[in-house]
Length: 410
Image 1 (tube, rainbow, N blue to C red):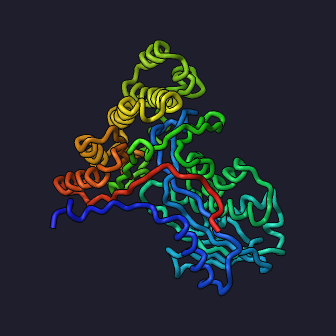
Image 2 (image 1 turned 180 degrees about the vertical axis):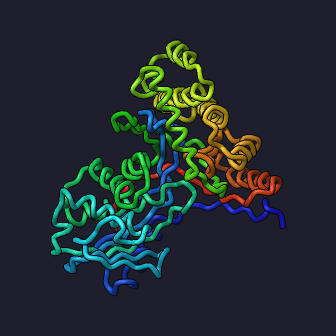
Image 3 (image 1 turned 135 degrees about the horizontal axis):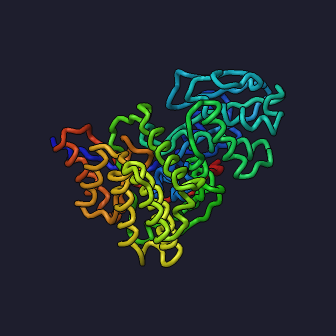
């Protein structure tokens, strides 16, 4: 049996049925009905990589794979937390005792949101109320699709609607970021949480990392017979080796050498100004790192402008070119790809993808490809065949359409 013949394209489960399943699992776990079922999506970055820490522009979209949280408000003063994916790792802790390290890591993404919101809403640690939560995570783990942010945002949405906290979207996003950064201890810049909360059906989210401002841009792929193929290369991440921190430090050195607070200032200088400033950097490595950040910000801006002016249908060719240029820059100037990422991108392009690029931090993880909807399976199979020929671990492919943000299901 060949690798191609076993390739399966994973699609998001039906949202309504998945919500009902979470509700049933809650009843089985706690012996009573949930007050509601809430969900939030995973996300993928269409374009705009390694620019967030230089105040750049990013363009993520929510995907159909979601995390569901069935929740009931109790009078126990305790957090009772269960997961369909971790059935033997239940949590039962007093809300007043929530603190970093008090629960297993997986539970910290949910407990941390409660902990973060309790500063402004002390009733969450008063001992007068409790929470029973059943989590059903349908966002694939380890594929760089922000399963943790989906969990955080589903819980934040549930707390707002069931307890009437009066939080804004930005306040919920901030609480989710604190949960990940301070409670769990995982670094995040807020892109994932912003997309999971603020995304809209058929749209991409233009996020300005300088001030957190967002704009929705039309990105209705199905209307134009398109889909976004996500391929998890299953290449082992190596961010802990220091490469990510090194790249960030190099961009900071470039900004300092140019007398700029961030490289966003350079990107905003216009084409001639950008060229002159980059040419002024004497160190070749620092210049290439800066060139990626600056040109990537410019690519995101052009991509968003094209979506706002004519949309996908009129600008498909140029949008694909920008995606391709993004990957090539990440490979050549920023040097964060690995062979699996480059082979996957090359195979997708050879199979007819309009554009393909790595997504996420690099050094492993996933690629995305903008393809005709009726060519999704064929493109996924082409990548699988290329992986088999190179002796790589078989990849996992997902079909994605731009989805909506956090909300109530039941």
